[in-house]
Length: 139
Length: 139
DNA sequence: ATAAGTCTTATAGTACACTCTAAGTCAAGG
DNA sequence: CCTTGACTTAGAGTGTACTATAAGACTTAT
Image (tube, rainbow over the protein chains, first blue to last red):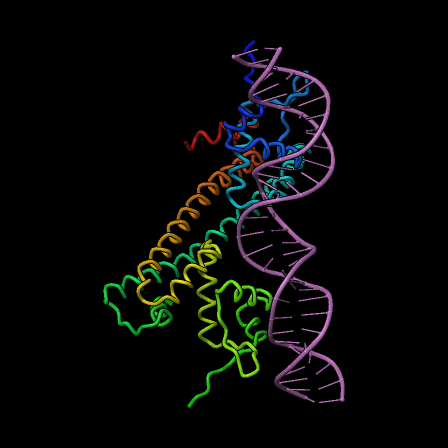
């Protein structure tokens, strides 16, 4: 009978890097459901650490709290919702890929601008050359 | 003497895809300085279109309004600020690259989770295999 | 025993970047 | 001429995701 390690909110807070405020907020939003001891005190387990870890990864893809809530609701509704959950994640995947692509495109312009500054500083491109003219080289 | 095309705020708004509210807001923030006609009416030119285009690219890298304002201020202060401007853009570049890398790492986890769902749906991995176990394969 | 931690609900504040309204004046186009 | 659009300042509202406080009760740790 190995007893499962129980974390109180402040310890758990340190472990997962979220404030106790945020943990209670997530609980209110239904994103995490800690257990309660005989006195009504919250406790969290390693399973909760893993779950929060996954939540943070999802959030890190840009997924909104609302989508996260939907996902949790589907999870709670049982195996019948597996296709719906997969669809939700696939949407997040698509959105994240699009977001990355957009960032990269914008970064490209920024890179060119820095190149231009470097060119100007090195006097290796004409002083009069405008950024727009310069950019046309890459179109 | 080819006269330069002047755009009123509503036309310009349509051209650049920003509301007139946003254009005035950007002006308040010092991000854009439209010209004024004899009656005090704003007008914008093709140079402003290009500038807003660049601004949107910078914003698209994740640059904050405050950084943008700094950049504009430096620009207005003349050529002596070129190194500072370059540094500001280099910082934005670094931040953007870091952001992209982080998104990609999180996307990776999402991809794996979707693979896991697909595995489960195909019954090609054991029903009992947990996501965490699965993920360990990639560590 | 006492300090520190946790519990509750409700509410307010923060940050960012808009987004919109009011209210009154003035200008431009058909 | 008259509707549509532009001007002004100042302030309120929106959305997202926290972040914090109050206040009173109760628990846990030293």
